[in-house]
Length: 195
Image 1 (cartoon, one colour):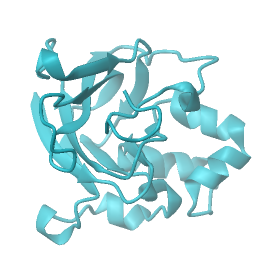
Image 2 (cartoon, rainbow, N blue to C red; image 1 turned 180 degrees about the horizontal axis):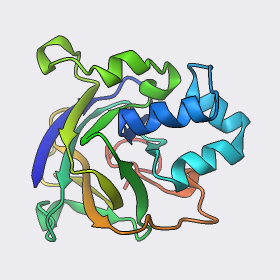
Image 3 (spheres, rainbow, N blue to C red; image 1 turned 180 degrees about the vertical axis):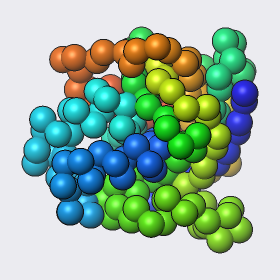
């Protein structure tokens, strides 16, 4: 399966999650705070568990920008080889139960609204900061490839983003002693530290 979407970020990060998995995790841990990012930062054992158990996959700190996102369950990358900036060697865990995966501005976990994501509206009723795609239920190992059209000098309109390579696995990959903050995911080509 290959799916291409565009997500416009208002804040400096992306997040992927199955809304059922994330909501179940919040209920299990009795998390009532709608700012899940703050909650996870203030309770790192819960935040680490959320990432390690594939409840969510955050990609930050990146610029608020318009990004192209490729969702790819095939074995071969669809990114033009000339555009490839990096591929993170670490495989990130993601658990899918509902068959739905959301890709969203990090705002989704700054102002968690379970009802919105569990009853995700059609595209024409959304504002471009999130999207949904179908994945069969199960555990996934996700590799992240960053890309940018290096041949297009029109900074505001050149394509840049991420290809998320999903591989269905029996057991979630283990990412002990890995801090998501240590990765450089910047692909915009203009911000400090960007590839």
